[in-house]
Length: 239
Length: 179
Ligand code: SF4
Ligand code: SF4
Ligand code: FES
Image (cartoon, rainbow over all chains, first blue to last red; front, side):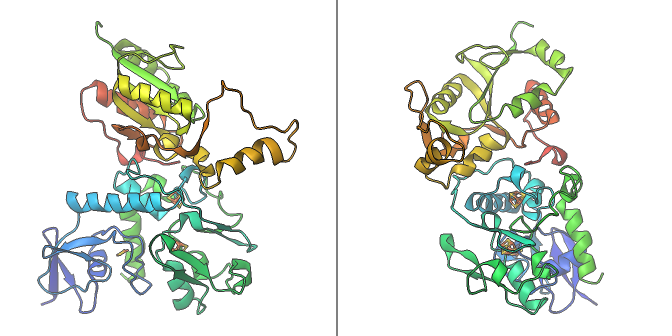
């Protein structure tokens, strides 16, 4: 008999070694997330995937599935917490969606939409973050970086390079670029690299492609992120 | 109808795009006119707010006059609504927020390309600029938020018809956009 965990009252089978989010995705249960991508080592930093496991908060993307876990996921309380986390991400950076090329295709925005987030609640930091437009094909807008670490992982794990890293702590945290000048143009990134395409937000953009698809016709203008994410990630998990 | 619902509207640091979008409710405006009347608003030219049921605020808070107007609305409106991206997070005007005010003024009026008669405007009639552009919830309590740049006419219609029907307003997924 296969082992099961229970999410929101539903029994879900899992295989040894799976995380909670992997078992959930396999079974078609969406757990909100931003820094998790099934192709990469879990990072566990955004905390959006927080679920209650036997009464305690855990990150579903890092916590192993174990026989007999009673898990709460899609509850009002957890979704309220997730909304607050998302609002903090918005006020920490500078997210002016109307002037962002990623709008409509942005996972941060899509998570906010799906949580019915109508305002940012907190005072805005309006922090002074930079733009790196040095590279001929790739633009970095640090204003929109949520430090999910996906570009770091993609560069190392897929591209076999080491273009990005996160440096510093708290308010001083920053995405840094591995080149003598610190500029992207002097790194060994290329526009074909996975790292150039994996950013869930508008922090890493491919130049001259931003408006191929008009605003209003984009992924999350039409569909909720729960469906989009499940469809995509089930394929990634080979289902 | 004897007691019409009174709505006041204003644009602070906004572009009037939200007001234009509101007018995009088209012929619904006739239905609306049956049950509401407008207080202070660009639609009426009334200069000061009197007791109103709903205050719709477009735009963020950029200067001293915006602060006064916002406080006047909060004092006089039972329900205050942040309408559009700029009221909610400062929007496009807030993109100056990480540049010191002096640098902004110098660039616009003194050192910028093509500036003639360079001088920083200082007529006492002009409201003073604030150090930053502030979202309205950072100055007053806000009761509801209508995101969008601008919020679509359907957003205005859904929100107002909910309120008029006496029910808690809510926006379904397809009406929530930040762009
Ligand atoms: S990265 Fe996403 S949330 Fe941030 S401004 Fe762009 S579209 Fe909006
Ligand atoms: S640039 Fe994008 S992918 Fe990289 S850490 Fe920031 S948000 Fe994540
Ligand atoms: S998705 Fe689990 S912490 Fe980010």
